[in-house]
Image (tube, rainbow, N blue to C red):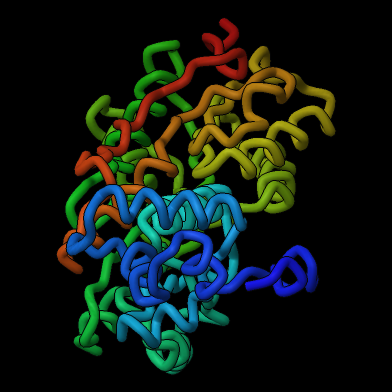
Length: 341
């Protein structure tokens, strides 16, 4: 190859044949290095990788799929309404998949209606995915996935964990309510998440169980939509009609909206009413006052989902380690205090 034929001279992207020429090997050998074939001498593989780095060669994924008869593509089924938790989990899934040499194709459900779920899964299967991760916080999605019996491995992921790990949302909710009870509160409200979300149901059950365990009468939980706007509107109504001294909100955004409602009517947190959230979104520590909340490891859950899916495909991470999500932890900040005498 003359100097005028090089990628630098022609302005074109380097090809697999350019790498082969520079390394002094066949293009088939370069392909084997790219696909991590074990049938290569270490010095040959090192020489090819050096040429790849020098030319800044990026393998063509479509061509690679044709050569190996594998797409190395993972489908992700996500909810239409994203929360901090689902967004963080999807980002972690993408990072872990990329590190393992896989790409993602993502589709969001328009609704959790059976026809929409089936249509979204068909869309992913038509792209020759090798596995599916369903970030499925809505209860109706799981039975449909079971019913379809897909020909690829499936991992179902919610904030409660993966198929092989459990993040006990009910226990996290109980810790939040117990914290308020230990401060001396007995009139505690709960603003819950949407009716058909797994996390919302588990957190509401935790609230009811902890109130019952302490012989306290729970107020009927208010079903929300995870948004700060709902927390604000519900707060204005609840503060007008209830004499509670504390509120446990199903997530931090509704807690934020509730705190806004408290200030809007001329009262204060935690002097007049204590507030606890759930999730520990990055902004929670910077609210005023900083929000007491339950922290969960969304990144760990997403990473573990990829680890488990790769195991189903007969693969493992580079170092073989299994990432276990951290347990839920109550983070006590300044939005909670004993009730006024």
